[in-house]
Image (cartoon, rainbow, N blue to C red; front, side, top):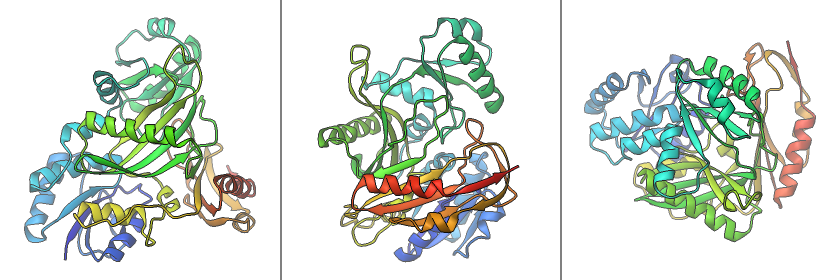
Length: 406
């Protein structure tokens, strides 16, 4: 029986979903994580405690394990484990993306440079070093702009600035969060944001789903809430989304595995930048949080099952999504503090089309909202005949939830 190594950080939501998928796929699983709390969650056919910030030592530990328990493939479930997965796959002589392609997908400055060098649409951008003259930069920047850490995900530390004062305030907040790391500054791109979930095989992209994000994401922070699929954008726009993600994957050198892309569809200021989709990010991983539960494919297969089948070179007969519209709402954290109670769950679950509600933050846990934080209070899931029905049900269910935060 094939053995799969799942690299999952202790903060990941996705242990259960990947373990369930592996069980359905009849695969032996070894979990590699950075703390015992994840390792003890499930009984698996092997566990490895690793230090994700020590790549060389972790690769050695994986290689030693492989000698007695041969590994057929490795999946880096979250962005912070993707680089380790590729380095270990290379060491074991198994199929993998290049190390350079993963580094370029993680580092936002390298990513922007890659788009620029390959002639793909990109905002004007620059990298700010800790010792740069920030005041001069603030006074010479075009507005509005967006400041973001070079190496963070989930909208953490991403702030819009509309003038020099807001620029300086945003820079100070981000600098205190990333402690001496570079910060990227780029033009703000107006338009509706969408997400594309895909799977690369021998460099060819299969688009699994395109999510609309109906709630405006105009700043000052970029807290994502509702994802709904199928997209209501014209087929021509959806084809262009696929094309741009394929071109970007080729430019980065990504050839295998899941990808999660964030794009903006430009609908304003055509004289400044061309209309149409612009790529914001392309990650060599699948969608985060519990959002993958909003996706179901032909034969009742989950996204995780498709990813595991691909990793193990098993045939994937069909990647058609189910007929119903589906969506997820990531419940935002309204303010900082300690979560004391959650009310209204029964009312929220009772709404038509609501399929599940998961509160992922425990009572008594500290809450940190964006831009410093990167967690959500939980997830609401809905399915209906149309995307608009899904969106309405998610918003209605969320309106019934009440959180007491001290």
